[in-house]
Length: 68
View 1 (tube, rainbow, N blue to C red):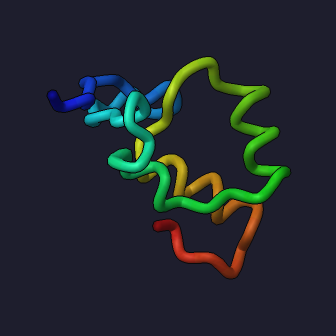
View 2 (view 1 turned 90 degrees about the vertical axis):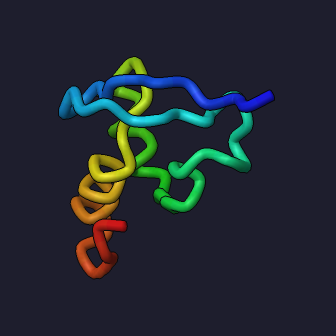
């Protein structure tokens, strides 16, 4: 059984496939965020973010990183 759910990004509202039910299959697990970025996300968003927004937030906190 596939654990993929269609969701809408809490930041940009774009549709994406969320695999959080099986985090090893979720694209977001490929984005490594530091503690400050994680705290920012937790403070500002109540639901999942798309891979593009996660990359943009990582770049805000780690200017030398690639968006994703």
